[in-house]
Length: 276
View 1 (cartoon, rainbow, N blue to C red):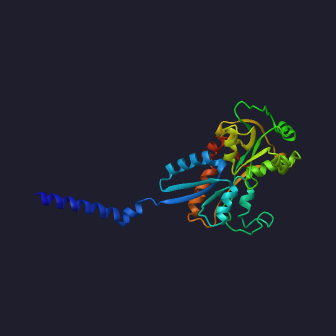
View 2 (tube, rainbow, N blue to C red; view 1 turned 30 degrees about the vertical axis):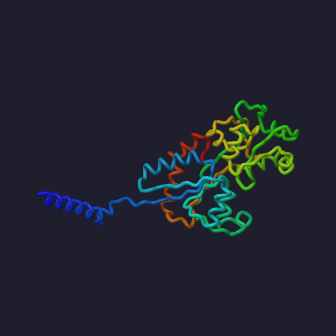
View 3 (cartoon, rainbow, N blue to C red; view 1 turned 180 degrees about the vertical axis):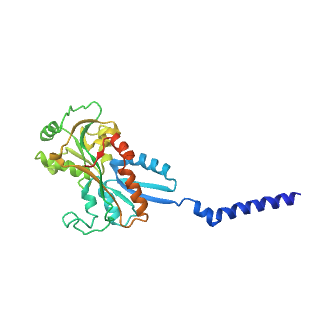
């Protein structure tokens, strides 16, 4: 009797395994796709939220995000890192990978962007932020310039190879300030990406810093001024599928989602806007 029960159990298990391995069952199983997204550090909170929403609605898709400065991400892509979708915090880094751009924008003639996939996804703002209590009483870029000229402030900005640093350099140049002289005088500290600058201000290790408006929102920092187009240009975030993507159609689908109204509400909730 015991032997019959064991045999019946084995037969039942064999039937289940056979059905699971049948062509029909395999065809019904959702195909698993793993997308690798390289995105500017300033998108960490929003893109993490959106990728979770997208994965919940698309069970066959897993999205792995690599957040860092756009310059670092561009270098990683150039050196052969697997990447399906790249979102930069400035056109410059995307241009350097885009074969459709001229030699001034893409001096090395790199060809990593899948043509026809590139879009201007978002616009951000460059913000002057201060620690809690604003101990130095900094109320504007004009006031910051006065303190830099008198040597009475410690100011945080991004490195020259990251977009937030490049935007800050334009602001300094707009006011006729020489960054190298200020740095030699010990008035500037640097961060390798916008999150590092944000942390310096949040921890009050500096008197103020320049970050994106979205990072100020996420960190709960006080914004005392924002730069206009005349000071540093527009802060545009381009996005594109990479030419060597293992899943170009899936990457396009996720990018389409990011361009849609549902995702844009999340972006706008922290201070991004749709790129004009």
